[in-house]
Image (cartoon, rainbow, N blue to C red):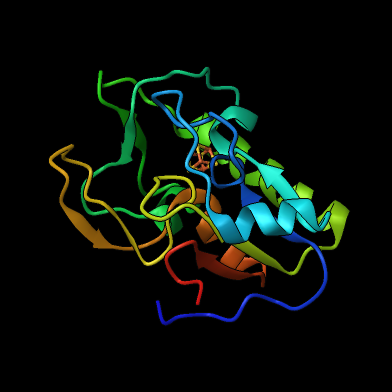
Length: 159
Ligand code: SF4
């Protein structure tokens, strides 16, 4: 994805891990200075789709199965599986719907979502083999927010 300008005003949905909360699958935070700035300005709407979908923290890492991306998960053509082989598609879909609800309730028109996550990734995600290989595509939440007309960027897209 090309570098994007951060909207100059209005609320922005942000991945909670980018805002400093320890929400990642291994219980870590991934704070980003520009997201923290938005938070301090009162413009950040924090969501962690995997937690909103009912998954615990820490949790097993998960990937969208090979050949699929967020769009295919939304259309029922791909599943999300964790590294133990458990299907977590329903939790990912629920989390995506809740993130969309947060966007709608707040009126946010843009989202800054953590790169490469099976929920939040935009442009590139892991290929479903748990080997660290990237493929083109969106995570489940990013795909839903994109489909619903939000401007999506990752922390790496920010200028
Ligand atoms: Fe961060 Fe999104 Fe993963 Fe939650 S689901 S830890 S917000 S990347």
